[in-house]
Amino acid sequence: MDPLHKLKLRRMTPADLDPVVALDAALAGRTRRAYFERRLSAALRQPELHLQFVAQKDGVFRGHALARVLEGEFGRTQPGLRLEVISVDPAAQSRGIGRALHRALEDEARKRKIADFRTGAAWRDHAMLRFLDGVGYALAPNRVIECAVEGNALRAREASVASPSRDTADIRLLTAKDLDAIVRIDARAVGRDRRAYMQHALDEALRESGVRISLAARVGGVVAGFVMARADLGDFGRTEPVAVIDTLGVAPEYAHHGIGQALLSQLFLNLGALRIERVETVVASDNLSLLGFFYGTGFAPAQRLAFVKTLAAS
Image 1 (cartoon, rainbow, N blue to C red):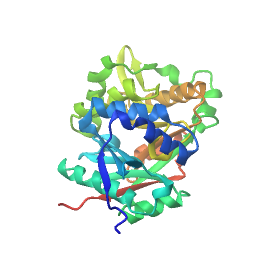
Image 2 (tube, rainbow, N blue to C red; image 1 turned 120 degrees about the vertical axis):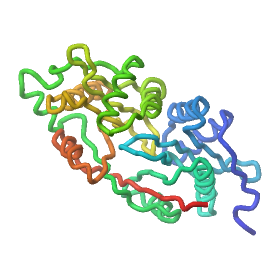
Image 3 (cartoon, one colour; image 1 turned 135 degrees about the vertical axis):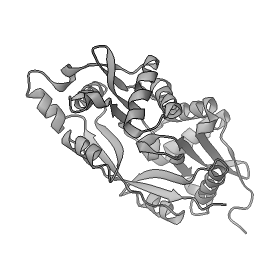
Image 4 (cartoon, rainbow, N blue to C red; image 1 turned 90 degrees about the horizontal axis):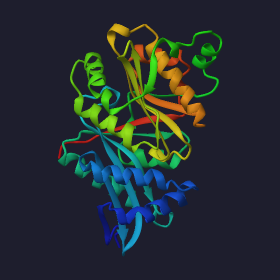
């Protein structure tokens, strides 16, 4: 008999939270309830930005998949989909349930005219690598880079000088009032207005993230730069708290004035106080200036790989 006989795929609802958390805990070895609570809450608040499915067979919960729409992350010009979590009950693995969940995401993505999927995985996660290969992913033209919060090159330099770079600007938590300023900075950097994306990213920074860590740098009361980051458990199977930088921008008139370093210096300081040990981001392989900036502050290639799947037109 077809192993997918009687398999039912449907949208995730609040009633699915407990079985989702229980399955994830069984696979990860620890509970990540707060992460899934935030992702479900975000999906209910902004359904246009989230795709979340569960799989049931004979009325028994067998798996789930969570993805969110990429709008402007990493300089994107077209919408994409970020696969965040896909999990199947160990007792039901190798029966095509994971593939069925992924097909449900693909079908919905095509309806929304989304052309590609993005995700990441640790290079030692052989089971996930086999799955991604099996459903058509390839290595993406992006680099996942990371930096230890303690003992990195930037913090070492800051400790050796009387006036660290963060003293060059007034660094504070990003607020909703900063939206217009960061939209202007971003538009000048990428050549187009991305207000909708910046609004959604700011909303996530202020409401969805487990810890508020996004920052703005002000010089003479004017926003000169910003960094949007989040600290959370969950994405791509992570079980340890990691800060992820989504967007960093500096106004052109403040370029080469140490604003970017000041933002990272304060970010590292804040993360150290929160006992978060690592920061991660994704940069296009051909963005040599941004890679050079991050490498100069202590970032290096991560133990994670970036993957992409381009959807064929239906």
